[in-house]
Length: 393
Image (cartoon, rainbow, N blue to C red):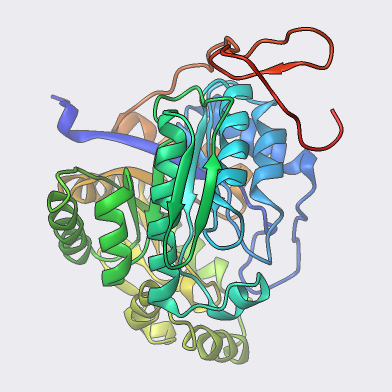
């Protein structure tokens, strides 16, 4: 009998960096054309996935632009889009989030990306070390939460950020702002999560390691009188039988050259991301050490940074493993598969009937609380009076 304690929230992935049928090969590769990404989003929407992660970074199309476009082509699907503290100002990003939340009918989720690769951060103009980026994120999210609360103008001065008279005139649909997600395995990431974040995301480690993270985050949140919910990011290779699923896993990396693996592992080893180092330690770049737990396979991490593990197996065994992670505290599964269009159907058709799946509601029409007065006059969202515009109207 299903209970609230075993409900699973399934998310899919928008391949904003490209797609294909083999890892480490350009053969049969699919580009990031909006027509294809729309197909993936609409499939996830139609199949009953609750949301979709849009990745961020220099190798990806912009997550905000894609979310804006895809929200207009879907009805229920929520979009998890990235905010990068230090790259954009809190108020600028809050305005984007509130607008997208309004036009999508409350289907925006915020992925706070504070860690990652130091060289990529430097390319974006952020010259802080790992812990410094999280300290900056703490200030950023303090401002963000005050803006989303909608209690007037915000003044803040910290070590990294300063704002005067910041105000969000058009509020989001979701009270208090879109839910905040964050993934990070370092002590500083866990501390920021405990103080600010609604949903903590981990990459796919064995269940015992995931349970340890869940406890650490819960303890950090308790210090601030808060609670946090949990999700996991993993790839999926599910078939009717175990043999077929593992054959597909072998096929996925069949075009990989050892030189490509060595090059990728050397580059990833330079990352200051604690989570990335934990991913690398699972397999050590060795093809014969990829099964790190029953039905948990680390082959994707041979040539892919970030989430490097997949659930592999028959639908029954994959569903059983998902329930094991659920027992460890994981509610949301952010899944993906190569290629993403076809594998969305496989996961939905084979796995969904075997789990207690949460369902999303269609977006609600948005009643705009702002109002226009005489030509050229623009009013505060509470209707209290006109405000000046910056730039051309």
